[in-house]
Image (cartoon, rainbow over all chains, first blue to last red; front, side):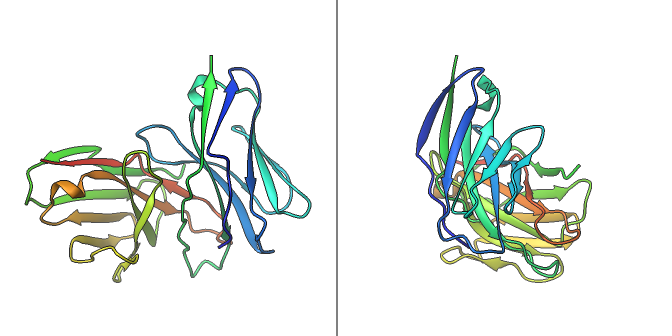
Amino acid sequence: DAKTTQPTSMDCAEGRAANLPCNHSTISGNEYVYWYRQIHSQGPQYIIHGLKNNETNEMASLIITEDRKSSTLILPHATLRDTAVYYCIVRVARSMNRDDKIIFGKGTRLHILP
Amino acid sequence: GAVVSQHPSWVICKSGTSVKIECRSLDFQATTMFWYRQFPKQSLMLMATSNEGSKATYEQGVEKDKFLINHASLTLSTLTVTSAHPEDSSFYICSARVRKGTSNQPQHFGDGTRLSIL
């Protein structure tokens, strides 16, 4: 699976939109972009994923560039509870007969400031 | 939906004892589950892939005789840390994925088990 690059840490003011970038310049055509976050002392939480179209759900929006070499996770109105480490992962979607492991990088530590 | 439950959430035991951690998929079946370990201020490290009805696949550097994995049913995988020592103290997390359609479905994670060996 392709490697991702994320900033080590970011700050965002409470109530503002938090935009977390991820670079995945070696992504291949059949690899999806997944975002997870981990709040302190908890297991990772799935946020959103996409292939090439922008995606939105109740938690966040995912913007993928046209060349798919980078993406941005957007938390539209950040709250203090969004303080966490955010992981961007690319992974191939294979057939149901195979289950592929996720390898975590170091992620971005997002601090939401009051 | 897609809830993964781990038990216990926190355990303290003496050096030399064995500790079993359970991972359950509560509302879906999981033929494969994954076990991770996380040390303070570090990212998650994959330990092994647990396959229902067959042997687990261990990552390089993980001792299979030390970390015993059993995946006896489609909703339960267990990780047993045998003869635990203080260096085994860590945060252990499992995950599983809903199997339907194409496999772009995300993995869902348990809340982890904090293991402290005295």
